[in-house]
Amino acid sequence: MNERTKNRLLYALKARGPQTSADLAAHLDVTTVAVRQHLDGLLDEGLVRFEDVRGTVGRPKRVWSLSEHGNSRFPDNHSGLLLDMLDGVRALYGEDGMNQLINRREAAIRAQYDSLMSGVHQLEERLKLLADQRSKEGYMAEVEQQPDGSFLLIENHCSICAAARACQGFCRSELQLFRDALGPECSVVREEHIVSGARRCTYRVRALKRASASGEA
DNA sequence: CAGATCTGGTCGGTTGTTGT
DNA sequence: ACAACAACCGACCAGATCTG
Image (cartoon, rainbow, N blue to C red; front, side, top):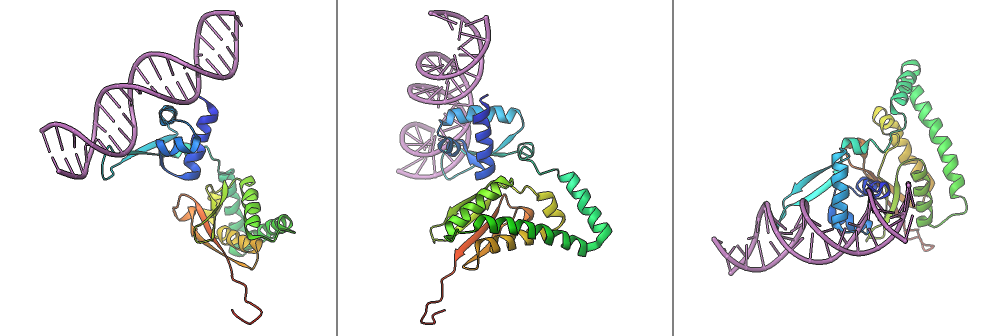
């Protein structure tokens, strides 16, 4: 099997969620037959699974998604070691120690993001920079502009998922980091959360209307 | 119940790549 | 140059459900 196409298929399923072979074919710019042949191979390897979903008319749609094994190809950075160390910090220094650890991490990342954003003022540009940076950190991030003019910052993978599950302080910290990185002229609200069982984390970003000189607020 | 509609599956051919 | 192979595609067939 073509490893590149196979990886593109896995990536598409990870990034875009469960899809039919037709959806995947359109996204990868190949035919549905080609997609099905690759999916059969991936099914044999246990990397994908499918569910037949009955619609209103016609043969049920076969919706493909990543299996547990397929998801495991997107690494959760040394999660076992990380959890051990977090447990150690908590045992030795208590919750206060954990919070200090999170704050220290947050400060280091904030400095990095501040440096990244310096001289960039347009919200969309800042979002793209942030998404690129987050992708480099393993979060498979992207930005989508929504019909209502807001933006959706999407993280398709959580590379610190094990830590985030063990201590939600990491998630609070990241939300605050995004708010700081994008600046005071926008609101950032988390809408989907992997730790809460969602497929991905999403953050709704809206530009705030500036108060005019006449005092309108 | 037959035909229409929508979707997935199979078969055989074409094209491009690689090794000899 | 040629053979072998992988990847892909078009044509056709089959399955599931709705509609008249």
